[in-house]
Image (cartoon, rainbow, N blue to C red; front, top):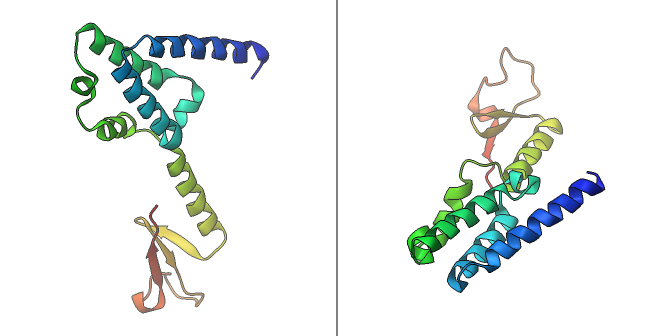
Length: 142
């Protein structure tokens, strides 16, 4: 990333922050909580710019223009609203889980099968799934 892009990104961020400050106080509080949540849990594409945050801000500005309260715009469950925004997005937690799976498979005799990691026996047989008493399956979830 060159200096010009960094400066442009900072200008874009400052303009974004000034738009947030122009919202009514209740909208600002909810926006900042959503922003905190997204920065903590959020989607990978958040690191590529302020696209999602800008879309939320535009949505809030439309709510202000129509005279709605912030909870009429988001619904009473702001956490569910935030989760719905990123439900189809890849998060850093997803990337971490994938890296753990790859390391587990790479460094051991585990095979992934339908979301389970299966340790198969070292004995030579026609197939590694010859008897369930000789394999161990574990489900890894985060």
